[in-house]
Image (cartoon, rainbow over all chains, first blue to last red; front, side, top):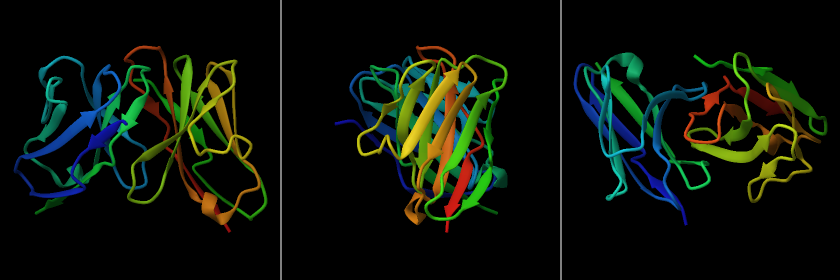
Length: 109
Length: 116
Protein backbone atom coordinates (compact mmCIF):
# COMPACT_ATOMS: atom_id res chain seq x y z
CA UNK A 1 0.00 0.00 0.00
CA UNK A 2 0.90 3.65 -0.15
CA UNK A 3 2.13 5.32 2.98
CA UNK A 4 3.41 8.71 4.07
CA UNK A 5 4.88 9.10 7.56
CA UNK A 6 5.68 12.30 9.38
CA UNK A 7 5.78 13.17 13.10
CA UNK A 8 2.48 14.17 14.63
CA UNK A 9 3.74 17.17 16.55
CA UNK A 10 6.94 19.13 17.10
CA UNK A 11 7.85 22.04 19.34
CA UNK A 12 10.53 24.63 18.66
CA UNK A 13 11.64 28.00 19.95
CA UNK A 14 11.24 31.31 18.17
CA UNK A 15 14.38 32.17 16.25
CA UNK A 16 15.60 28.57 16.14
CA UNK A 17 15.73 25.99 13.34
CA UNK A 18 13.45 22.96 12.99
CA UNK A 19 13.51 20.01 10.60
CA UNK A 20 10.33 18.12 9.80
CA UNK A 21 10.91 14.69 8.30
CA UNK A 22 8.75 12.75 5.88
CA UNK A 23 9.21 9.19 4.66
CA UNK A 24 7.14 7.68 1.91
CA UNK A 25 6.30 4.45 0.13
CA UNK A 26 4.21 4.99 -2.97
CA UNK A 27 3.44 3.34 -6.28
CA UNK A 28 5.48 5.54 -8.52
CA UNK A 29 6.90 8.96 -7.81
CA UNK A 30 6.32 12.23 -9.61
CA UNK A 31 7.47 14.62 -6.98
CA UNK A 32 7.00 15.57 -3.35
CA UNK A 33 5.18 18.62 -2.08
CA UNK A 34 5.20 20.43 1.23
CA UNK A 35 2.19 22.50 2.24
CA UNK A 36 1.54 24.74 5.23
CA UNK A 37 -1.88 24.77 6.81
CA UNK A 38 -3.02 27.13 9.54
CA UNK A 39 -5.93 26.02 11.68
CA UNK A 40 -9.25 26.45 9.91
CA UNK A 41 -7.63 27.40 6.62
CA UNK A 42 -6.78 25.58 3.41
CA UNK A 43 -3.22 24.41 2.70
CA UNK A 44 -0.79 26.73 0.96
CA UNK A 45 2.05 25.56 -1.25
CA UNK A 46 5.58 25.73 0.15
CA UNK A 47 7.83 23.61 -2.03
CA UNK A 48 8.15 20.93 -4.67
CA UNK A 49 11.03 18.43 -5.11
CA UNK A 50 11.33 15.92 -7.90
CA UNK A 51 15.12 15.52 -8.07
CA UNK A 52 17.45 14.62 -5.23
CA UNK A 53 18.92 17.48 -3.31
CA UNK A 54 18.09 20.63 -1.47
CA UNK A 55 15.74 23.37 -2.68
CA UNK A 56 16.06 26.64 -0.81
CA UNK A 57 13.41 29.33 -0.71
CA UNK A 58 14.00 32.04 1.82
CA UNK A 59 13.70 30.74 5.36
CA UNK A 60 12.34 27.42 4.12
CA UNK A 61 14.30 24.62 2.46
CA UNK A 62 13.21 21.18 1.35
CA UNK A 63 15.39 18.14 0.77
CA UNK A 64 14.68 14.94 -1.15
CA UNK A 65 16.36 11.54 -1.38
CA UNK A 66 14.42 9.33 -3.76
CA UNK A 67 16.54 6.24 -3.04
CA UNK A 68 15.70 6.51 0.64
CA UNK A 69 12.09 7.59 0.17
CA UNK A 70 12.83 10.53 2.43
CA UNK A 71 12.32 14.25 2.54
CA UNK A 72 12.60 16.99 5.09
CA UNK A 73 11.40 20.54 5.42
CA UNK A 74 13.82 22.88 7.17
CA UNK A 75 12.53 26.08 8.71
CA UNK A 76 15.07 28.68 9.84
CA UNK A 77 14.73 31.77 12.00
CA UNK A 78 11.40 30.56 13.28
CA UNK A 79 8.67 33.11 13.79
CA UNK A 80 5.48 32.76 15.82
CA UNK A 81 3.48 32.88 12.60
CA UNK A 82 5.16 29.63 11.52
CA UNK A 83 3.00 27.79 14.05
CA UNK A 84 0.90 25.61 11.75
CA UNK A 85 0.55 22.11 10.41
CA UNK A 86 2.98 21.05 7.70
CA UNK A 87 1.73 18.50 5.22
CA UNK A 88 3.93 16.23 3.13
CA UNK A 89 2.36 14.91 -0.07
CA UNK A 90 3.72 12.66 -2.82
CA UNK A 91 2.51 12.63 -6.41
CA UNK A 92 2.22 8.99 -7.41
CA UNK A 93 2.37 7.31 -10.81
CA UNK A 94 -1.10 8.66 -11.65
CA UNK A 95 -0.13 12.18 -10.54
CA UNK A 96 -2.49 11.81 -7.62
CA UNK A 97 -1.38 13.34 -4.34
CA UNK A 98 -0.94 10.96 -1.43
CA UNK A 99 -1.06 12.95 1.79
CA UNK A 100 0.69 12.51 5.09
CA UNK A 101 -1.26 13.19 8.28
CA UNK A 102 0.61 16.43 8.85
CA UNK A 103 2.98 17.66 11.52
CA UNK A 104 1.70 20.25 13.95
CA UNK A 105 4.50 22.69 14.69
CA UNK A 106 4.26 24.66 17.92
CA UNK A 107 6.54 27.69 18.27
CA UNK A 108 7.30 28.92 21.77
CA UNK A 109 8.67 32.38 22.59
CA UNK B 1 -0.53 33.31 -8.53
CA UNK B 2 -3.43 31.03 -9.30
CA UNK B 3 -6.53 31.67 -7.23
CA UNK B 4 -9.29 29.26 -6.34
CA UNK B 5 -12.44 30.48 -4.67
CA UNK B 6 -14.92 28.45 -2.73
CA UNK B 7 -18.44 29.39 -1.72
CA UNK B 8 -19.87 29.44 0.83
CA UNK B 9 -17.12 29.63 3.43
CA UNK B 10 -19.46 28.51 6.18
CA UNK B 11 -22.87 26.88 6.08
CA UNK B 12 -25.20 25.53 8.71
CA UNK B 13 -28.04 23.34 7.56
CA UNK B 14 -30.65 21.10 9.07
CA UNK B 15 -30.44 17.34 8.92
CA UNK B 16 -32.06 15.98 5.77
CA UNK B 17 -31.44 19.01 3.59
CA UNK B 18 -28.96 19.31 0.73
CA UNK B 19 -26.07 21.73 0.48
CA UNK B 20 -24.16 22.82 -2.60
CA UNK B 21 -20.56 24.02 -2.45
CA UNK B 22 -18.98 25.79 -5.41
CA UNK B 23 -15.33 25.77 -6.36
CA UNK B 24 -14.05 28.18 -9.01
CA UNK B 25 -10.64 28.71 -10.57
CA UNK B 26 -10.48 32.46 -11.09
CA UNK B 27 -7.51 33.01 -13.38
CA UNK B 28 -6.75 29.67 -14.97
CA UNK B 29 -8.51 26.74 -16.56
CA UNK B 30 -8.68 23.78 -14.23
CA UNK B 31 -8.58 20.54 -16.17
CA UNK B 32 -8.85 18.62 -12.93
CA UNK B 33 -10.47 19.51 -9.65
CA UNK B 34 -10.26 17.62 -6.39
CA UNK B 35 -12.59 17.52 -3.43
CA UNK B 36 -11.19 16.83 0.01
CA UNK B 37 -12.67 16.42 3.42
CA UNK B 38 -10.79 17.17 6.60
CA UNK B 39 -11.72 16.23 10.14
CA UNK B 40 -10.30 18.20 13.07
CA UNK B 41 -6.58 17.59 13.58
CA UNK B 42 -6.52 15.12 10.70
CA UNK B 43 -5.00 15.31 7.26
CA UNK B 44 -6.82 15.80 4.00
CA UNK B 45 -8.93 12.92 2.79
CA UNK B 46 -9.45 12.84 -0.96
CA UNK B 47 -13.11 12.26 -1.75
CA UNK B 48 -13.14 12.48 -5.53
CA UNK B 49 -11.35 13.69 -8.61
CA UNK B 50 -13.26 15.39 -11.36
CA UNK B 51 -12.27 16.23 -14.90
CA UNK B 52 -14.20 18.75 -16.89
CA UNK B 53 -17.02 17.20 -18.87
CA UNK B 54 -16.71 13.71 -17.44
CA UNK B 55 -17.94 11.84 -14.41
CA UNK B 56 -16.05 12.19 -11.18
CA UNK B 57 -13.88 9.38 -9.88
CA UNK B 58 -14.73 8.65 -6.28
CA UNK B 59 -12.37 7.24 -3.71
CA UNK B 60 -13.21 3.98 -2.02
CA UNK B 61 -15.77 4.42 0.72
CA UNK B 62 -17.17 7.70 -0.59
CA UNK B 63 -20.83 7.46 -1.55
CA UNK B 64 -21.30 8.94 -4.99
CA UNK B 65 -25.06 9.28 -4.53
CA UNK B 66 -24.55 11.26 -1.37
CA UNK B 67 -21.73 13.50 -2.57
CA UNK B 68 -22.70 14.65 -6.04
CA UNK B 69 -19.92 16.26 -8.02
CA UNK B 70 -20.38 18.22 -11.21
CA UNK B 71 -17.50 19.69 -13.19
CA UNK B 72 -19.48 21.54 -15.81
CA UNK B 73 -16.77 23.87 -17.05
CA UNK B 74 -13.03 24.42 -16.86
CA UNK B 75 -13.52 26.94 -14.07
CA UNK B 76 -16.33 25.50 -11.96
CA UNK B 77 -16.93 22.35 -9.98
CA UNK B 78 -19.71 21.81 -7.46
CA UNK B 79 -20.10 19.39 -4.59
CA UNK B 80 -23.63 18.72 -3.36
CA UNK B 81 -24.05 16.97 -0.05
CA UNK B 82 -27.47 15.36 -0.31
CA UNK B 83 -29.68 14.54 2.66
CA UNK B 84 -27.04 15.81 5.03
CA UNK B 85 -26.62 14.30 8.48
CA UNK B 86 -24.63 15.52 11.49
CA UNK B 87 -21.81 13.09 10.65
CA UNK B 88 -21.33 14.97 7.38
CA UNK B 89 -20.24 18.02 9.35
CA UNK B 90 -16.68 18.69 8.30
CA UNK B 91 -14.29 21.03 6.52
CA UNK B 92 -14.57 20.55 2.77
CA UNK B 93 -11.74 21.81 0.59
CA UNK B 94 -11.47 21.87 -3.17
CA UNK B 95 -8.33 22.19 -5.22
CA UNK B 96 -7.67 22.71 -8.88
CA UNK B 97 -4.88 21.68 -11.18
CA UNK B 98 -4.09 23.27 -14.51
CA UNK B 99 -2.20 20.45 -16.19
CA UNK B 100 -1.83 16.71 -16.01
CA UNK B 101 1.73 16.44 -14.88
CA UNK B 102 3.44 17.77 -11.84
CA UNK B 103 1.53 21.01 -11.59
CA UNK B 104 0.73 21.88 -8.04
CA UNK B 105 -2.78 21.87 -6.79
CA UNK B 106 -4.18 25.26 -5.85
CA UNK B 107 -6.51 25.10 -2.90
CA UNK B 108 -9.70 26.96 -2.23
CA UNK B 109 -10.21 28.48 1.22
CA UNK B 110 -12.49 25.65 2.34
CA UNK B 111 -16.11 25.37 3.45
CA UNK B 112 -17.07 24.62 7.04
CA UNK B 113 -20.28 22.58 6.97
CA UNK B 114 -22.27 22.09 10.15
CA UNK B 115 -25.35 19.89 10.05
CA UNK B 116 -27.69 20.28 13.00
